[in-house]
Length: 100
Image 1 (spheres, rainbow, N blue to C red):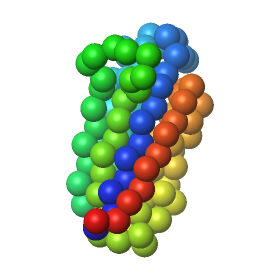
Image 2 (image 1 turned 135 degrees about the horizontal axis):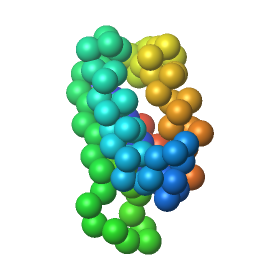
Image 3 (image 1 turned 90 degrees about the vertical axis):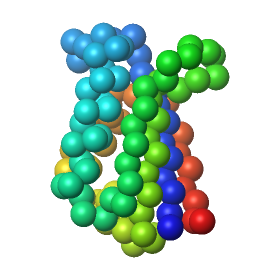
Image 4 (image 1 turned 180 degrees about the vertical axis):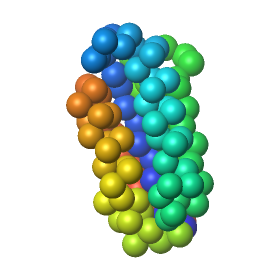
């Protein structure tokens, strides 16, 4: 099993959305990938609830059967569309991928 973890920070405003609205949009857009991208085994998106200088704003915890399934997710057109928006909006992105 491959676990794919991504954490983002976002600005106070982007594309006419305040930070809270932006984080909710990111969460909804990511969750909408479930059932569309066949290679996803599990998917959980969380919005940070405890502010700190070390905290990210949104985190994605997802699992895939193997590295090929993760690669299929990465190149899937629906994921690419969501990733394009998040990439433009995010001020920071961190990723950890590991096999267990």
